[in-house]
Image 1 (spheres, rainbow, N blue to C red):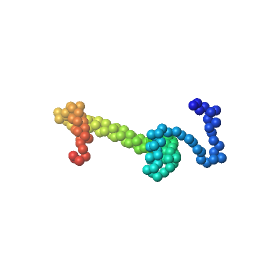
Image 2 (cartoon, rainbow, N blue to C red):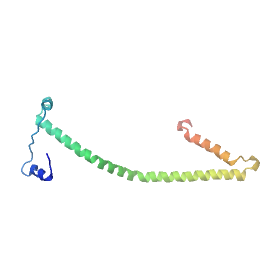
Image 3 (cartoon, rainbow, N blue to C red):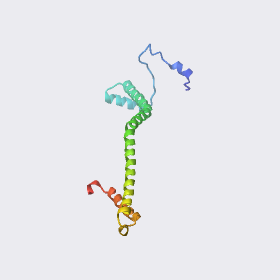
Image 4 (cartoon, rainbow, N blue to C red):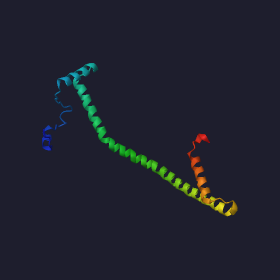
Length: 145
């Protein structure tokens, strides 16, 4: 059946006149018997079972349609809340990297300026050894210390 806008108008109902509308549906014998069995088991009318299932399906459809919108709103709100903390942590991390570079440079300068030439190791090998020790230290578990 083609339900164009013109054809749909034939089926529209003036809701001001009636609060509840009747609809007739047809089931296979097996489906009818299953619904009848469930209705008997729950001590309800078959019509009430069908109404309940229809309303549950319609409510579920509305929820599934809105879930993408709700998810996007939650993501935006969480992003707005977390952004200042993330930016602060990134800034602190950048400052820490700069300070680490300064410390490494000052250490190399100290070796070059204050240690007598005959006692100076090659700065590159000293830096490499210190870097390996620092990496090993950072990889240790907190409980190992």
